[in-house]
Length: 116
Length: 441
Image 1 (cartoon, one colour):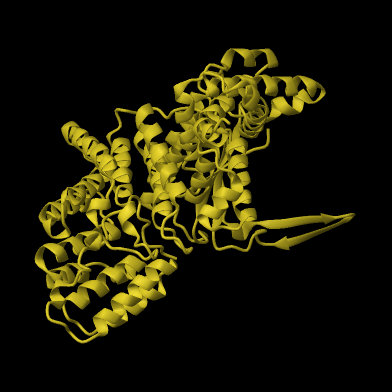
Image 2 (cartoon, each protein chain N blue to C red):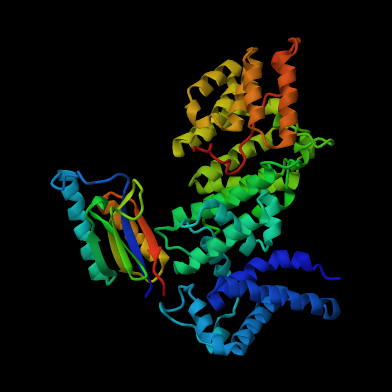
């Protein structure tokens, strides 16, 4: 069955987002519901919420040399804040899950197919 | 000598649609259909055209595709890996075996519908939807589409390749959408057809005001859609709108190629057969009473078609229809057309008042806004008409339309003549399907 990455995006860095704010808690509760629904439907493979991009490190191997740099790889304002891997029979089914996920977490979701 | 080009144009979309279902892959289907037409081009002039040319092409294309897959059977794995478009009537994960292909060749009416929804998949950008629709359903080749849209050929080729790859990589399903998603998905198809029509109706640039081929192709597609989905009133509305707009084509350009506005058109040159067909469709929509944006725009075009002279136009009816359209789909362009209609019904001052209530920032880069405003200002005897004409001319890429506006500006700047209020250039532009909304960037 085809697999898709559903990534969740923030328009701005979200280091200072208050996770205990009522709206944030509601979004997290709704997202849990979608996870449960995906699991019941056999679509769920993996889900993770990500710490802010400022917590990222880039590791780059060149031959025997390995370098590390602070910060995310892409220096963009927009940040990936979480991701799902789902299985779906086709694009339309994946888009339907993305619509549910976006409604739940209140963020835009990018849908991308995996190889094979 | 058989009319191969005509048969190709009529049958290519249907054959490709079926072959995509049979082969599960757009490129394989296109190649197979092209090969079958090449064989037809050799055989038909000698043996005559078979009684069912579309069926002949489809069967031949299927057989050739199977032959080729068998010939290249060492590479079958690769081909099977390429077969990723899943039809509803195939099980998920089903990998088509060569011998299975025999069973799927019947021409299914739904195939064309599936292909329309695939080409206009909302995951594709509008320009890709339009290009893919013309290529796969219209049988136009890449250079033809590039010429029609005045896009460099490599750009258009790239657009089509990317769109096809995206559909394949994403496992886009080959099916007719379910009832729940149908309204949105159908809207995308209607919007694409209407964009094709509009592009043919008023070329954005280029020295000829109309490009007949695109308009005819759009009407053909709208016709196919209404035949396949007779119970969708908006599809019928779109067909009616394109027919009623097309009916005015013979009167839209003067013998020197210049543009003639609706109010000045020689209405005896309008195509009565197209008007009759459009009217019948509008009446059918009214009886069904499930109004939608395309049906209302068709009704507006029908009111224009009803008027024997521009002066006889029932503007109050048109304003009422625009009111309904604005309520249903609030949109700056619709509101602009409504203001123009008010200007016709109650005079230039009332039209300007309606125009001033619009959000000018949304319309600043929209040529028809400045053209309509200039016309209303000129009719109201205002001096700032010239500046509005300048802005409209600046935004006009089509040379024919630009010459028209330049003449208008000169007339407005000239000494006031008696009866200037009866300027012949009174009617606002009638709606054309899918008038693109102002671009915001």
